Image (cartoon, rainbow, N blue to C red; front, top):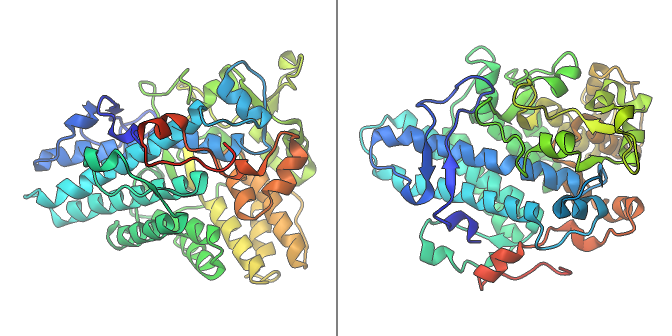
Length: 457
């Protein structure tokens, strides 16, 4: 709980587009205790800091979704990664701590903006509304991740250090209600976009009404509100702001593609490189974590189509417990695929397919199978012809593996659908149902007497 109020923490304010600047002014370094929002010229640097906080949350969020589940096996010497690969996660795990800290750092910067911006004069109403809406959205986004990762978490609504020092956990349902409140407030004031109004990079980098609706579609899917999940995902699909890439290879090898709904970017000067939260470093450079044998078998089957290109094989790496397989999605600073995609249009088709299947809308142009086959056609995979609801729901689960793997969904999917215990206990003898929630980081419990630990840790 103290991570976001450790005032020695530096937020690097950088441009968000890969190999190009998309936010002005030039990047600067800003200390959290020196956040300044006193005049119009301060608004843009603090806004950049808000987006930078989102970037800091992105890599550990991907690790939570995919390292906790059945996609990976341990292949290195770092304790944090071994714990995920062998399913022996502890409250002292550094990645567990990093995600918590980045969540509350994002909440802190959002709260700072919401507290200070109303007092700033001589800025346009459009700027005030947009920046306020961005802060509301990203606070909601952070709390959504926190609630589905840790369960009951503190609800932090101020930057006051005394108040924040001993904030207790509140019910997950309370946090999720606040997420919806933030999303709805953001939706009202975020700018609208059309396919012709701006380019793909801006559509994925900046928040707007359409990518807010995409986040809300995911929100309602997790809450099992199938009608709202179907409606919002349909709105995003029909907006024509985002378009399915013709070739799946572009999803793997390119940044800021046409179907990217929300994406955080890096350039040569700010790529995380060899840091502990660099996905390229962990998955490719050091190979601390490698694709599991079970995952490889699924991905190289004909059912995945061109999605098999998510991973690649190198016989030179095959030795000992190393199966020679590597994830391709996260490149180095000099490559054109080192960004992290947080939402893309394919997910909207899968959200709609699941929501439709749950409502027993199976066949026809407006049925779940049509949405699955739209993605399978792009991937040159065999079409499916299913009619039973249970079969379609399992097909959606598999399609989410083929289409979205290593984008941070798998563990969250298994937990929200009640499938985690069956799938992951078969995957690892060390799996325990306590891992359906991450532990509260031990350093936070030691520094915040109001925090309690999740059961089993």
